[in-house]
Image 1 (cartoon, rainbow, N blue to C red):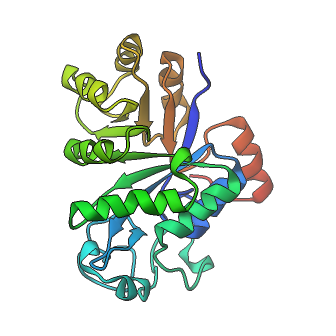
Image 2 (cartoon, one colour):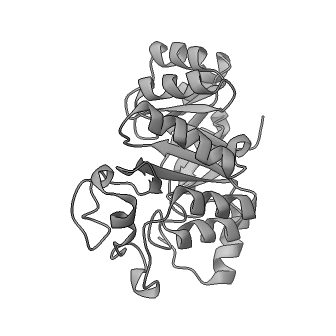
Image 3 (cartoon, rainbow, N blue to C red):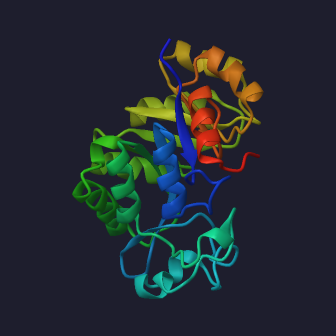
Length: 250
């Protein structure tokens, strides 16, 4: 059985503001195998890293994320998130900035496709990742199967992950067969360890999100889950780093 790989959800987001360079740096310093990030395309074709459909919760601005120009969204200040008082002056990062952090720490990037404007934006996304030198060290994940199919038509090799908050189904297995190389990415509250076993019997890897408790993660590990996405630290090695760094635990 392969060892499970841990993904830092929006960076180490229980220790620093989510989807910021600080959170991703912390994940790298902690030794995470990979990070998960959310990305949008601006009105003028730049990919930035942010989770919500609007900028209201995390910044001093207001409005729909994809409706900002690159210059306008970069002017916003991050004003929320864990420990924000310790990190003045944070801005919404570019995808390139986050990929540079991944590259410097040897981390894999789970790039979640959120919103964009046209198919040319998706082509630009692939080009951006390729220019960073990270195309061989990333996976694209998305709740929208059609977006994943578009990416697959543009690139036959990059791994794809189908995100779902629903109970696993046979149609999910058929989708990953069409998209391969691909995996399924489930909410731990709707998928079960037995679902992981069934997928493994069909040769399909499963990623589970978002688990912040080692007791919850263990049955999935025993079932053979490939990836676990977490906001914090779940392994003994990471906990040793956490204690040494005196970070806040949940």
